[in-house]
Image 1 (cartoon, rainbow, N blue to C red):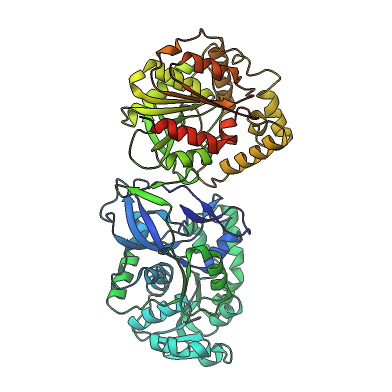
Image 2 (spheres, rainbow, N blue to C red; image 1 turned 60 degrees about the horizontal axis):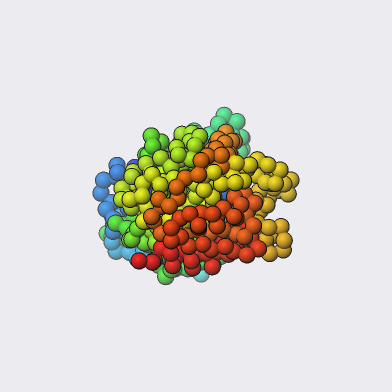
Length: 625
């Protein structure tokens, strides 16, 4: 899916491909149709909240949305797929600037039936702000007077309508050009902030809702009656907020200090200052939808931009002077997801969600993509690899026509357990995974160490494997496999990579000529395209165990590869120094009816360097009857 992601504080958001989230037991998966844009998004981007909320960067930005439920967790009642909803993801989590969002069931509600999706997306933040300020915190009563700053903005337009519905006398600040708008919404007193001083126009008000901060907040304290209340939504935060956020004692002291001057001034005047940081609340959202459908609250959308212009939309919201809310819409965007039973499946490797399944007594991670039809292609990867290191160019091409499943065996990546000390143990775990997935037959694609495992699975369970693909790999007892720690490669090239501050695969997989160096850079860029939900790196102990298993495979007695009856494609570069290329030719001679592809001027990563030619051969092999 497409999403706008913050990778580093104070850096611009970036539009990237992301894995589709998987909903937890108490979560709902929503296809986002529109998302509201808020000043708080900029405060997160700039790092203002990083000491308060434990953000994990990179993260998807955006907090409010409207869309359609497409899946839900096991503990969620109601909210069936197809339900039109709106919600607030919570500033501490975010995730709304994306095609799909996973959100807690209590953070959303059925959307108003009388609004467009864009209007619904404009409501969650402004409605929760107005309700929690005026009703929950302010206890605004009929006949009381409230001053709402910035009446023509997103919060202001809704707060004016709610205050009027509650029976209050409403004063607001606005520009002259927006005076008619705020009067139509219910304002009794309209103050032109460009030519009038609000402190000279109103006094002894019961409640102020301040959306501006700074001098406006300070002056607002002086126009409230004794015993009255000033609620700020832009700061400074107060000790109650620190308690609500659950920050550590040091941050709590700092927050107390930030608001000390304002609170002292409020005490001197006999008034109260409170900072409001809204929280998600399903019941509050439900109440808002009811009032919208009853014609009490009319959403005010000022600017609508396509999702691709989200950064521009945020800049526009920050510039001020907007009438109503700024919203981005995805309804005309081309989606990157397909659905199976209501749940999305990514169509690119860089966006495929990481999932888990219990197999071989462990919790194994896997990713799947492509159409849910035909024989699935199971991918088994190389030494020290995690799921992220499959080349997206190859996997995406494969997934255009085939259901692809890549698995992390025990002890690798995010899978639990320990790395099996033998190839046989790895093969047994691979079979357990396939059975746990409920698959009766698969096409098996093994690269490097994964090719050893694929051979063993095929020999042990010939009925399970329809077609076999062996790349960058060799047979048991193959000459040279038992020397993976020699000076020529692995540890030496790992060191070279560290000294060059690059991935060692640049040296291990590719020639160091101009063509190989360029192919390495392109390959590393492709596998680095995945921004979030990356798999865990291989622990050193697991790496050492795999090395010993590889050496043992190389020293083992040759197997009878003539027993492999599955049609087999063998591919490699012409000068693989990790698993000598001559072993590809050896397997070709010994596996009946096999096909051999050797790519020129390339090494262990030859199938990635020559990805276009390889995928053409791969698709032809899998399609053959």
